[in-house]
Image (cartoon, rainbow, N blue to C red; front, side):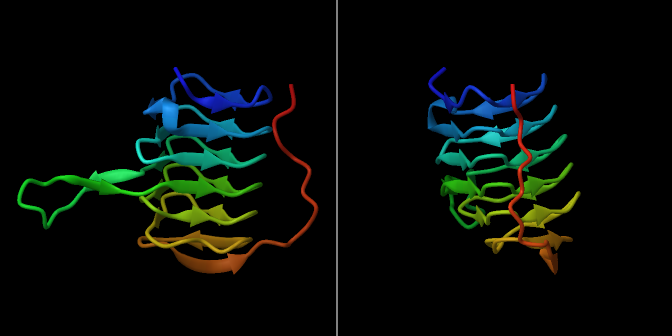
Amino acid sequence: MGAKISKRVMLYRGFSVRAPQQLIIEDGVSIGPKVLLDARKGLVIRKNAVIAYDAIIWTLNHDYNNLHFCGKGAPVEIGEYAWICSRSIILPGLTIGEGAVVASGAVVTKDVPPYAIVGGVPAKVIGYREKKQYCYGYKA
């Protein structure tokens, strides 16, 4: 369907993709069930990232100030070894840094720095992950 997906990727049943031709998924990524990947404006998921059950990544939404409620958006990038936890939401135009963690239920409205842990609505930095040579990721 036009997506660029590396061979060593774990895709669980039941996830959805909007505009797969704008989706890039690198090696070692794991995408859980009920995940929604909106790639209409471009979505890149870097090596060994984990996107857990029922997470949503948006690249396009409605402009609530537009008379015609037109869409607006921008690409999203998920960094290497990032962990997008269950039922979190990432809004358009954001970068989730390398090794960052988005807590369950968080709504991310701003870029997340590398190795930051964010949580809440809207998501705020609540801590930092240790910077290590992580070596997890899906391996066939």
